[in-house]
Length: 87
Image (tube, rainbow, N blue to C red; front, side):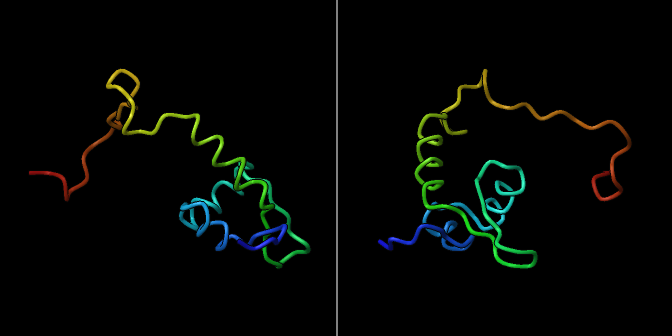
């Protein structure tokens, strides 16, 4: 394992098992600590964020482990159905 202090988004994605899009979303939402040296330069994520992320995900139940009572419910949006959904 490398002893680098910071990881690129791609490296973080590979080590965490998250997709690159998810890592970017976490960075933009402020869920992952990140550092950008200057405008238009790459974003770096501290290696410690990887350990923090794994600790947080081990505490929260996965979607498959939820019971039916806690599963998110889909609500139908109001309005007419699109033409491709009509019979």
